[in-house]
Structures are given as C-alpha cells and as structure tokens.
Image (cartoon, rainbow, N blue to C red; front, side, top):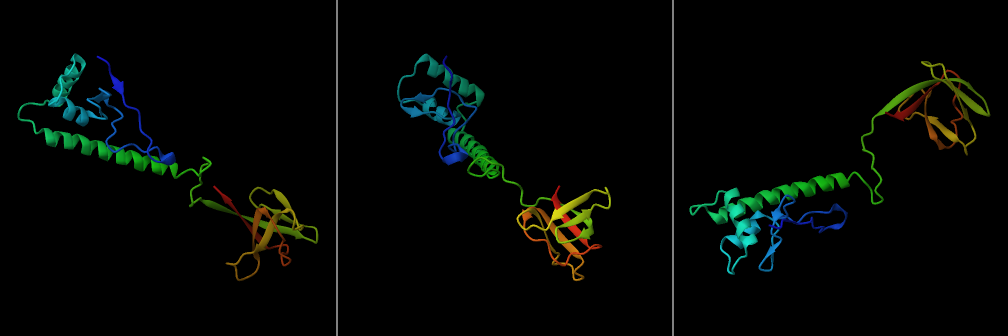
Length: 196
C-alpha cells in the first residue's frame, strides 16, 4: 500500500501558517475521487460510504481507519469527524500562535529584536580631575581610571543627572558623542548605566 504525506501549506507571508484542517501526522491516501485528503476526517468521509468502486489500497486504508477509530454501526460518524477536525483546528491555531510569537522576535531582515525590558546596572565612578582637555574618572571598586576627552566629536558624553538636585551627580553615555558638562569638578559622581 502506498502511503503519502501531505506537505504543509503556506497560506500567509513569512509566518507559514497551516490550513486549519491540515494534519502534519496524516499518512494515508492523498486524494480520493478528486478530493484532497488532508486528515483522517477527510478520509473517513470519503472512504466510509464511497459513491464509486474502490481499489484494494483504498479498501485497506478504509479498514485501517475503522480499526483506528473503533468505528461500529453505532458510531456517530458526524460527531467523530467533527471531533477530529476540531482537535486539528485547535492544534493548528496553536501552531499559528506559536509561529507568530516566534516570528515576532525577529525584524524583517531576520535580526533578533532585543526585549524591551533589558536589565540595566549602574556603576558609580568618582571624578578625579577635570581640565579643559579631559575628565578622569575612577572606579572605586576596581581602581581603574578612565579618561574622557572633552572633545564633542569623540565618544563619552557627560551630562547632569536630571534626578539629582545637588548638581554633583552626572550621567555618562560612553557610546554617544557630545559635550562634557562644564560644571563637572573633582569629587563629583558619574553614573554609567550598562545592560546586564
């Protein structure tokens, strides 16, 4: 007996959604009497009470379905077919939801989009010296000194911290170019925010 697998149908852009009655696990007759069979429900409807004569493959597959679903004379075929389709639809809608959620993590070029709520750590540095050419910052924990040029075309923009009323606290954006605040003096604190 020949067994066919139905390939997943792409029906919408990059999300590759499935048809709601597509069964990725269906292995059986691909079509019967011109009708595409995508799942067991389609096959049961087509093969249980056929309008045309069936060949031995089709009869064998029908018998397999009868055994698989324990179909008897008392079985409500309409309810059985509806249950199979409802289960498939629920699985495929979940598949679509999962694929859309996965695709939402990427932009149109396929680059991973960072989460909005990136955790940030604050590192407080002491201002050791400040002259016309540079500001020297020191990490009190490690003792490492960093020289920030006052040249606005070079990275290391330092501005007053808007949340500090004393004016002795500053914020540095090490990656941005811009001016270093003229009011920065030795003894002030500079906060550097870094993603974790």
